[in-house]
Length: 323
Image 1 (cartoon, rainbow, N blue to C red):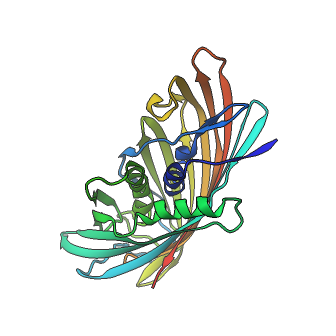
Image 2: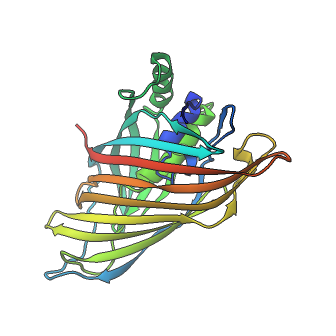
């Protein structure tokens, strides 16, 4: 039996904006009678990826470095489509998620050595409910929640090797906690717009690997990504990437669960694939990515029996230049 999973709109907003963080933000609880959705909290720790060159590629090879011009501005459009199917106790339900579209404007600020300060702001945020069974009222409420991102922004520091660090939002007092959580999770999406570059000179066919560890409300998620250059020009690089996200067996922070409930992440295996290009002189990254896999969670409420939740996650994300 398949049932529609409807999250409260603020929580759905958090889920669809944070879906790239291993899909863990969309974990929810349900029993034979009703759904009791919840979301994981904000990202608290992410290691800076180091690059291990596996193959330097064919000659001629060149050092790949981002070039910064103070005052240069780039606007990108992000499109995210999330599908989640959960099974437990013979029941099945799905997350009925509309497509989310955001535009973000990046402006290069002062440079120092091989780093530059970059400011960013959300200039658009909408939802497209075509193909879902959300009501007009639900779509309007979700659109309002997502729309609160517009005008918000912050600053970060990016290195010539594509490492995006020192990330901070400039948020007004009294901002809705759900919007704050969505922004903190969206940090992972914005950081991912930069391509981590090795120090060594590379040519077409070059391959390198990065390893990162993210802590999400106490849940530790490891990701290994392998990149390969498919085209190299004076102005940019085209590439493909494959990623694998895993998590060891671990307790899920009870603060993210309904009162009286406990949960243990049994396993998480998420695979991703990306094709993209990067203009080394403008911070413009164009990518198309898919992310899919499963998670297994053991759930328990009070002294009741343990219930195994199996969750299938499928995410499609695209990034392109915007006007």
